[in-house]
Image 1 (cartoon, one colour):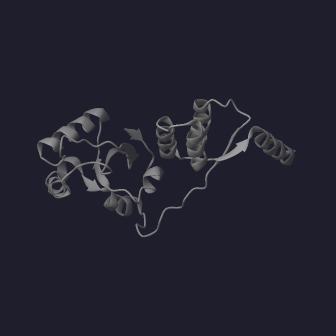
Image 2: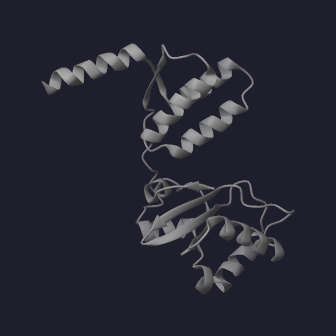
Image 3: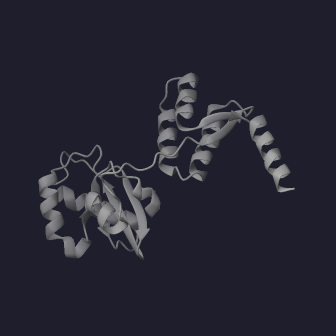
Length: 191
């Protein structure tokens, strides 16, 4: 379960999922309840559950997105269930919510953010230290989901070199010295 902003949700045009609107109270109760309910209805297949779940606030409501990625489900049954329970859960597809609630043009790809600069050269070379610094850089630049994805990939990587390569996919690796010189230039301009 991840908490995201509406701005982060706006970038999810290549995803599909079920959004339940107005989910007050404990999010875990909602998540467990919906997974159990959809199993009993025969919608979630082979004892599967939703793995990528996002909570976001919009229009004074707490909403939950159940991402369809890597979930074994009967979409036809889910569509019927969504229509039948719309008044209770406010269920809608992500692909309907984005254009109708957030005004997203579904035919236009979201702007791809450039990789942020991250001063790793000159830091402690421990891969977990480097991963933490890169993760903080991504989060500061509004790339929380990419930070999580990067950490997961590094954790299961097979070598130090592979882990460094993964970090380089997400951030531009720079040196501490470059960052210090950049900060000096900014201070000089301010004087």
